[in-house]
Length: 129
Length: 360
Image (cartoon, each protein chain N blue to C red):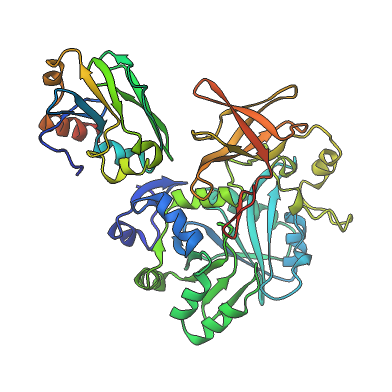
């Protein structure tokens, strides 16, 4: 059973989104995703300043097993990226919910509500299995 | 559900993520294959390799038969327990399997791959026609490998004094019996270590004892990254029935002398031996971020194209390495196409690490 924190939102493509106090949204990949990928060896982060539509590929996570695109769960502009993951990609496996890939200034905060809540994401993962 | 080794329940108890390998349910890893890889290079680890096939060969014509069957020559086995690595070829000179043969008191012992078991047994049995030789498949034995610089010392500390003395005496690539165990100084990691064949009834307990003294269980994920770093081929990826051993970095395993020794595939190989345009199996190192993977296209400027046969992230180098079949004239640079973009790679000998030392 993978860990699915209640306070986060999720996409069907296994990204999590966390609304921060300043209105920005941090994005990472779920425990389910990191377990499926195996040991992460490289992450490719987007450039700061890039703008994405919800559902657009925004980065890559490469594991010993395969390379997977990371999709932005929301529309918006990248305002920060997590360089710690570039040097220590294994953090994605060790602590997936602390290992944010990038932070977005959302273009449309209502999009957050359209994402899956923990229960819905849990159901989606179970259906996948 | 695939076939299961005697250690299946223990793998689950140790937290293994199980996968299918050649029809067997095997542990891919027990948490982190990268960590398991480092364990073996720095200390030691234990692998369940009991899916592999153990055959005992005996009879008045055992030697003559093996000299006909194999591309390497068992006449080179000059003392009890000495082993060699060989290709087993078909008439067209393609590789049916790669294997290890040990000289024993009663004849020979051969270990062949798990995924090719049925094919190999059918071929071997058919080839015995006209020879006074008998083959016994040792389904009563289980094989464990303990590999790494501390492997022999740690195992010797655990077993009886007779077995400890035997372990101490073993030369590299030698295997000897002690009671109903057979202990060999062979392996698939490029480190020192042992492959131990013991009665299946004793395997679970011994595996527990090894783990109990702190020897980490190691899964197939790390097994693959270790062998690739060590430049060891994986049958079905780096070579197959349509590939000549000469195009698979196995030329050194062919015993051409004595010239009078006829072995299956010799005629085809003799014809290839003098070809200047046979492809070769080389090593590739990707200096930048990314992972080389099997089947990616290799481009060699002005020469032609090749293909990666095995690729992975190398934990010891901290970058990606691969084995690739490329045109004969390939020098020291090439490019690999990864997800539509070309990346430069260094072309090197296909052995990257040996005894923990980076060679490239």
